[in-house]
Length: 221
Image 1 (cartoon, rainbow, N blue to C red):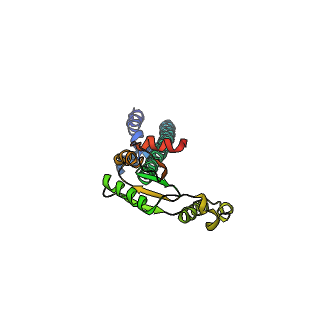
Image 2 (cartoon, rainbow, N blue to C red; image 1 turned 135 degrees about the horizontal axis):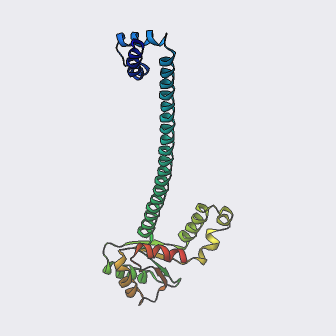
Image 3 (tube, helix red, strand yellow; image 1 turned 30 degrees about the vertical axis):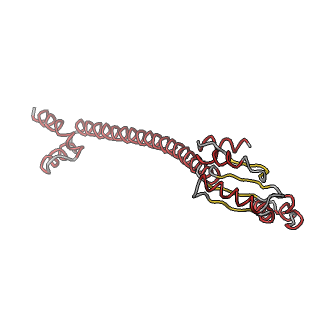
């Protein structure tokens, strides 16, 4: 009867003993008992095995959870990178569109006839300033036009084509011109006024006020 009671007490303490949470006195009591009781010793062994198995299962679950978290993070990072790249592309394209618009949309090129007189040139310039007193007017001589063509080819990497120009020889192929920088809304009325001048060969500009339409229009040229 005494052994049975002692085994019952030890059985209640075995889980705590395996977990290491017993007091020193209880530990000593259980340790002393299992040295002489194979039944309780076997129970302890089973409890220890169960605890070990639970820990291993828990570790595997934790590892699986961490793997899933990493997969989700990786997918999320890829998604963020893709979206970020798209946004960067959109922003860059918009910047290019507006730079292109600001550089070209507010300009008129007025090409002059070879027979134009100095007086006619002054009249043209005054007519432009009458429509926009702040307009920037730049005279491009035939020589300057050839130089600009050479520079354009050089910048594009076509050195052979650039070297093929000769300013004295080719200036007759390029008409003198006025380059006018004004507000986009002034372009149409300036062109309307200039149409009456005999000394003008032709004019080139864009009256498109939408930066996106202007960009598309230039791509199609």
